[in-house]
Image 1 (cartoon, rainbow, N blue to C red):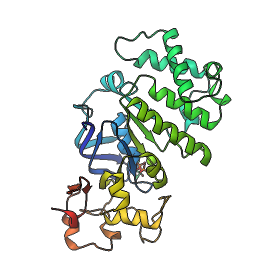
Image 2 (image 1 turned 120 degrees about the vertical axis):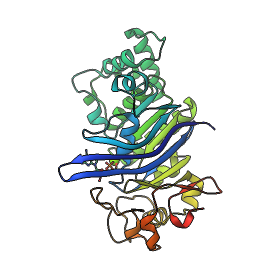
Image 3 (image 1 turned 30 degrees about the vertical axis):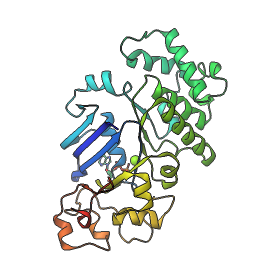
Length: 323
Ligand SMILES: Nc1ncnc2c1ncn2[C@@H]1O[C@H](COP(=O)(O)OP(=O)(O)O)[C@@H](O)[C@H]1O
Ligand SMILES: [Mg+2]
């Protein structure tokens, strides 16, 4: 299968009043066409920052210091905002946000808001007019199983439930026929039953539309249900990535093992392992998991971050798995 998104050795710093925060440290991640990749790790590990870099919506004072973010052969990092907005974000790369309540403007009907997205981001050669937009939005509203789809076009965001609003936003993400959809914890703001329905919907849409999905979560249950591949981050470094079957079934990296062993479902906190995620203002040199790792050795401090390829196809960022 071909690679759609290829993040290579990405480092990113954010200037803060306390100094330079080294948020991402030589992160690599590869997403195949048609794959649903779960990006996991404790809170504060840099998952959202990585996703924002792919979307080109980095926080102010953020600066990529190394690496590339290659989407279908084009490095997105050097592109001016104008090109990113016109050709990639909203067009070939769709986005499903974490909190559907914050992502829609309360002043406008949802049909009007989605028609505006279509007007700006419709694929080349498509009619950008309102009638075409409404027909496409209506078809998508039906596909995401919004009740009373036709009437929904003329409703305001507050007239929907949380789960329905997330369906509206999934339709918005798919509107311009993206190849990649990025979702940052898109179900955490929803109740458990609704979460499950939304996950099943995303999974069936991905299969049907041949989408690649980059799905941020801190829930291994979600990874099991939804993903084909997993990438595990710790403190701004990638520690293990590969097929879900391998990484969840037989984890190599001590951090992946700890995550799975300590907390089968939620990974908010790494129960059972002392210590906390180090501050990006003063990360330990080499492997950033070293201070919490049972198997740590002196040479771990000198090991540069990065995944070593293994015979089964996965990558592991640990000195004991270096070739
Ligand atoms: N705008 C910012 N300024 C300074 N630090 C930030 C900013 N955004 C995120 N961080 C820091 O970057 C690290 C990673 O954050 P984030 O990407 O949100 O992690 P995650 O999504 O995995 O919880 C955290 O230490 C966080 O405090
Ligand atoms: Mg986050």
